[in-house]
Image (cartoon, rainbow, N blue to C red):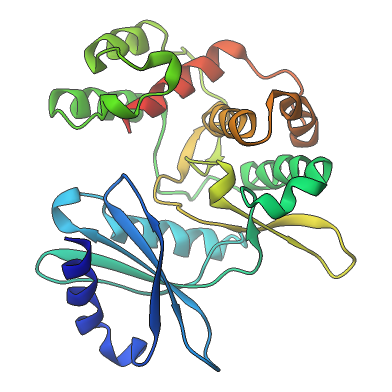
Length: 269
């Protein structure tokens, strides 16, 4: 299926990608595939493809990337969005740097978690008055309910602590623990280490040079990003690096109930 999808898409993109070599870098469980497109003496591009039936709406990710670009956020430039009869694609410029999950950063973990915290704080300071992307709690809970009813929740992918439970059971817990208030900011939606690209400035300081996989970005409670960042840091780097990350972010003591809620909410998507 993925091979036919990439052939279908590259036929459409012939003019832009003539002579490029395609290297798969991520064949995700979500139904999307990402390809590095390279050629001598030409800029490296990234091609994200998905079957239309997967409902990933890469057009909505393109809209978010364009909006984020106008607000000076470090995201890839959208070259093109399009679709064929059975697939959609998103062609992006490369962002400089290396994902925060790369083992090469393990020698610099104090700098890494500082860069992650400061980078997330910068993202959350983005003005939201004109942001059209709504991920407020009512919308997200309604969407979780819809996905459970439609059988779209992948129970086999639940976090270890919830593995073996049913989506309907988790939904009951979600509805019972929904926070009454929100601390609204502009959120990434999946702020985990593989989706954050790090690089060094001219003076050697490590910083967030790129944000990728922005299809769920939008206005939501800041704990939405904090919960997934903490989970990712704990998994990839160790629990001991969470506190320095939170200090760098500027919120040493986030609200535990909201962290639990947003970690649970993520199971439905």
